[in-house]
View 1 (spheres, one colour):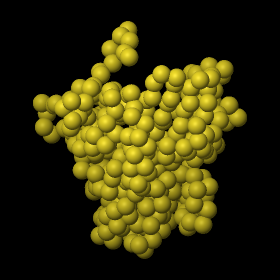
View 2: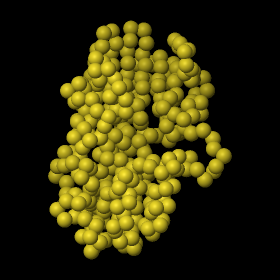
View 3: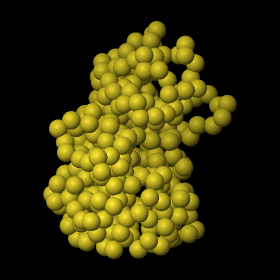
View 4: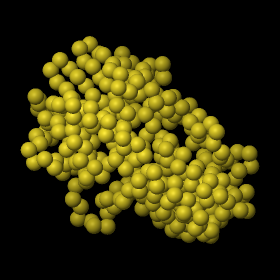
Length: 326
């Protein structure tokens, strides 16, 4: 999506049907970049799309964004697959296993594998090089316990394209006896994708810091990083900020330490409840080993050279500029 507005209008763009639905709603709340929805075509999972002699098939996989897919491409002389962003600690690992089985049977010529969690070695050991991931299915219970323990207002910062997380945060609030309060844009997504859910909307219908401060232990309030300075309007006593894969994503982002410092200055505890959309290095290597492509191409990584397959006989190519591979 990040480059969708620089693609020529003459070039067709496809999204999974789920992804296209989410994309349309993101446009309504002003999250770009944009390409008119009528110029985006939907594909159904496991139904090939033919483009000349090329067939492209999307497979639903487990990631932290609604509608994510792995892509299988067949040309007259080559079979290749792109994993897309993928994780094995999500709520639907069976989707990944189904795709892996299908790709194993295709005897792929190339597998383009994401390696987001492969990082170069760092001299600074204090750097958050590897964050322990909570299985997505345990997020609701972990967060609910933090909400029960907190004596003041509880805040949360998450990635609003992660609809599973949105649902799990609502479950956590209900279990802890708190009312969840969404920012207006997120509330729009909640209305669309969870029409029967109960939530409040920040700064609408009298739901504001003054009201929340009267009963601070009864609310679970969204606070995106862009709005972090609004925290000064709340009582900080006993408050907690649950950071669950919203921006800033980690210590590699300078804003991360700034966020921590600001929370500390207000006396608000910071709790990281991470269940990212990318598998850890062990999970990624296991996927490669299960598919057994003829050639592996590591990419989408800061350190693709560190994606060393379990099978020492596995052929690996690290792409180089102006070099052709066959």
